[in-house]
Length: 384
Image 1 (spheres, rainbow, N blue to C red):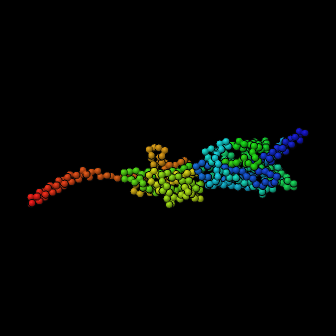
Image 2 (spheres, rainbow, N blue to C red; image 1 turned 135 degrees about the vertical axis):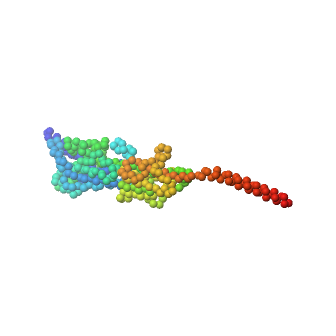
Image 3 (tube, helix red, strand yellow; image 1 turned 120 degrees about the horizontal axis):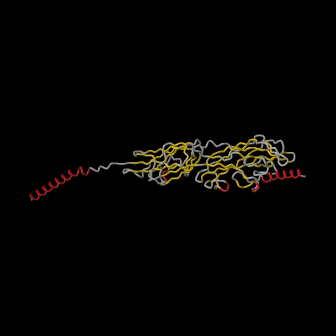
């Protein structure tokens, strides 16, 4: 009797897996299933054009007993898509109750795992390990999920004479699944919700990466007693090691900063597929150009044509937050916001000694002229 009750408990637990598994399940064979990949992005930045790679490998078998069902090691080579993100993807505000950054927005890509090429030898649970590969080619601007792996259990059952995949369970490996490998009501990472509290079609397990960005601002100041504060100077901005895609441009104090050759369209610049951008801008006194949301680790070079003005790095506005005094020369591996620019000066010497030097001569000349005019006038009157 006791053994019969244990068998019944096992069957009930297995049915619970089938009914409340976080992944899709139905009476028909489900050869594919999905999970969510999230990317957190600063709210003022574009979603970057990036891809994340995953692998599915066989997990370790778990021997069952009279109280638990055995778990088989996965077999074959199931496939898993890349997670793909791009500029313009829909985002939602971060939810702090789910471990998300409330100051960011999150884009989501649904990733498919495909088990269609696998022939399972019999009914049971087959375990796989889903692993996100390290992100190494985005200049250190992306932080992977703190846990790079998930356990994926594939549930295989008989349907007449056929074996079919009838459900999936996906969980964080930190959960003690060996003691209870088929029970799905467990917390998943930072998600406070249980499988059993969710609709079976809702994917409660996900991978979540974070994208960190920095801004680049540059400005112009014109000074000097011979300076024209309305004169425009040509700036050339070159960017390298940036994630390809569009980046928003903000301009302060003049729409005509954007000129032919700036490459600005709809208030955005485009970084090419090789991670580079070069453009020119026309700045006068007080103008500011801001490139928003560049990835950490990029490189910039800023130059200008100073013409007949004296040029100095930086713009000092009396030590206020409006100073643009960060390094101007080519800077690699940028990890913080940059505010840079140039101050152009044109001074002239006013010849202040001219009046003093000429004055005695001019006074004498005027007196001589006056005397001559008096004498001529007197002679004319005498003649009459």
